[in-house]
Image 1 (cartoon, rainbow, N blue to C red):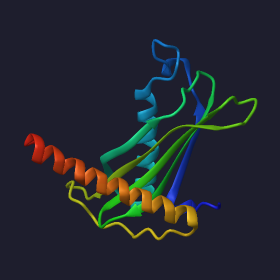
Image 2 (tube, one colour; image 1 turned 45 degrees about the vertical axis):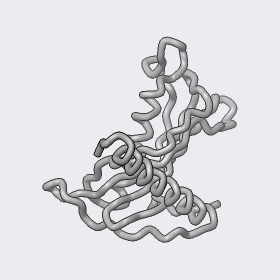
Image 3 (cartoon, helix red, strand yellow; image 1 turned 30 degrees about the vertical axis):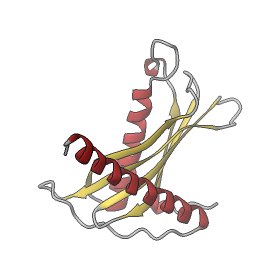
Length: 161
């Protein structure tokens, strides 16, 4: 499906030896850093504002990433609220000689656009343009509802706010 370029960013690079953990695979924290960087770039591009991370939902580690693999991190806006931007991020890896990418990670990251004082500001509305974007928006809304329910459970069951 054709992607709407205004709602997405894509980072491409090689996994480096400094990215690995003691087991010889790319460290999960490094992958989360890449996810945060790509999703921030996507949020800033969409809102044209400084944006802050609100939540990370459903980060999945599906396959390990090896040193030397070509990495592609794609972040795309799939839903907006008044000041929030819900971003679907997928990480893919491949041997650079083969160009056969596999999904290694995926998640939803929510950002909030802010003004210079850190207060929320309105963002333009995202309107899905194709069937895939419609489905991703539905999944993002489900993730948002789950996050709200999780916060309620923490408060009701443990007294945490």
